[in-house]
Length: 293
Image (tube, rainbow, N blue to C red; front, top):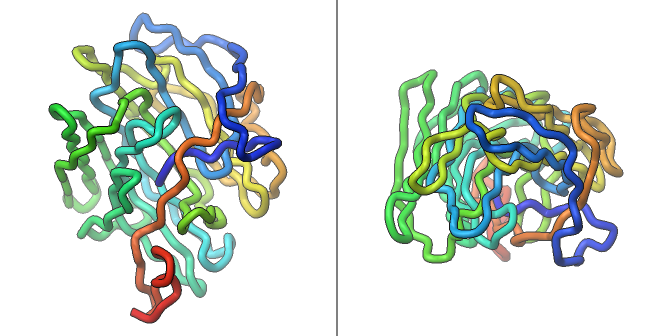
């Protein structure tokens, strides 16, 4: 929930390393789609980017919540979300769903976050097999609308939140290994998640698929435990999948991209919201972590 921590030989290296153009993929618009692939310690999926005076005003996408296995181990977790910023900036405006594994139990929940503020649990129930539609929209000066709908149950949620720091320089569709404090949790085994109807809009523009923008595919290459790989774009650049891969040390590629670059460490992950399973706070801030609830 939180900026991607990129895999580097020296983790504290700051600055984007030179990326090489891999290929071009046509989208729904006339924009060229420059596909780069980077490794991240906690993100898998796609980021679309813009530069200069252009800024994203909307990002949206759909996915079906996969069934999470307990094979990833106790306290493993995964979050699926769409958002603005965070790929090359220090804030993230994001909304989605997540799952956490504890003592062979899996808890699913919906959430939003205006990083660097902590995440907030949305008061609606979600479950494996539910089709989720989510969007983040820049409404007016410093104001964002974050919306999530469960198309399977008819539930929906929307909130207006403020941020004066958002650059709106990127849009993302992400499967993430969340963090507690500064520690990235083990990635939960979710099999495969399919993102569809992925779209973004620039100020004053019309919606375009991921391939309508300069975009980067991201593979999650955990230092230990499970990793995840991202597929090539399909359906006019709207759809892709993220799949769990075993092992560590780079995790391998998806077979659709050449690994071209690594990139800067962007914001430190914030703490997860407190979740209570079996009478214990699984995650949270500082001294409250692991306390009874």
